[in-house]
Length: 139
Image 1 (cartoon, rainbow, N blue to C red):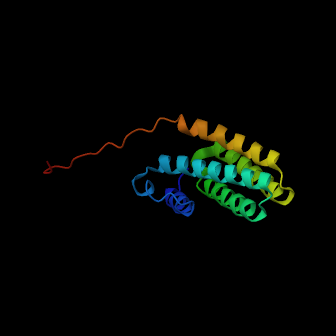
Image 2: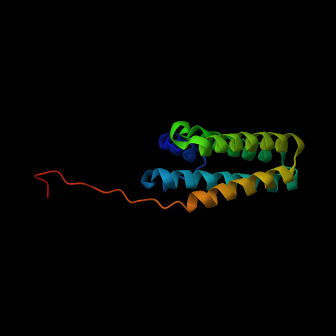
C-alpha cells in the first residue's frame, strides 16, 4: 500500500483526528480498517433498528474507506497480492451496496469478517523502525 496521504485524508473523514498526525503509513491503514469496522457495526445496528438514514450513512462511509484502501494499493510492487486485495475490495463494495438496498445484515457480517481477516494479516506485519542517519558535522 503506497498512498498514505490518501489514507490519512480518508481517516480524517471518519472522525479520529487525534492520532492521525503522528501515525505511520502502516498505522494509518490499520486505522482505516478500524474505521470500516466501526461504521459496519453501526450500520448493522441501524439495519436491526430499521434506521434507514443511519444505515445508508454508515454503509456509505464504510464503502468510502474500502475504496480508499483499494486506491492505496501499490499494484506494481504488490503483484498478485495487491490484485487479489483489489478484487476483494471490489467484492466487499458490491456486497455493501446490496446490503444497503436489501437491508441485509448477513452481507454486512460477511464484509466484517473479510475485513477482520485482512486486518489480522496487516496487524501481523512487523514494521521496521526508521533508521536515522547522521551526516558529517552533525552531532
